[in-house]
Image 1 (cartoon, rainbow, N blue to C red):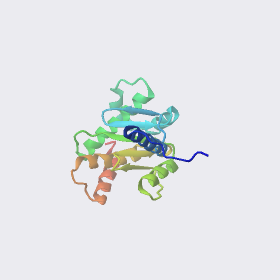
Image 2 (tube, rainbow, N blue to C red):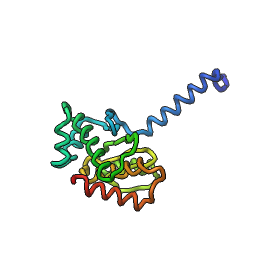
Image 3 (cartoon, rainbow, N blue to C red):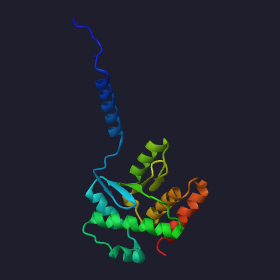
Image 4 (cartoon, rainbow, N blue to C red):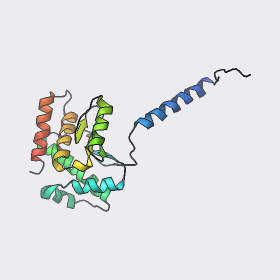
Amino acid sequence: MASWAPISLPMTSRHLFIVVIALLFVIQAMPAYAFTRSSRYVTLHYSSSELLHEFNDELYIGRSLRRMLRKKNLVTVEDEVMAKLDIIIEKAQVVLDMFPDNMHIHVMLLADRDAVGRIYEQNYGRSARHIAYYSLKQDTIYISVDDTSLKVFSHEVGHAVVDHYFKVRPPYNIHELMAQFTSKHIQD
């Protein structure tokens, strides 16, 4: 009868094995984003073209911002979404009169508020019924496509701009006031 003995691998092979196993655990924990696209201010992550189309339809930017969109060379829905996101971020910077250096954030499109809630619980260990939120530590906006609007998205962008502008973060209530101010004046 054969006895069990640990596998004796050279040190480099053992390290490689541990790294591969660790990566498998990380990959399983991450939500599936089949598509990623980057622009000047945003890296956008989404799971399907249908979700992107729905997000684009829901993110109506109004007349004043639409004029800025017309100046862009847009071929695909993806081009239009990326242009909208950059325009909203630029306008939020103007509204707040804050122009942070090297501003770049991630935006994760999620199907609905339940998906946003699951991500929030994974990140913070408590449940919430948010339709969107900006994660300061991950530099990421998570947004429910079902609940997308210019007001919701610009509010989260307000948080991101404030976060990137100040070296020391302002108190939460001040942060929230500036995000509310952004969403209120985004179409001025």
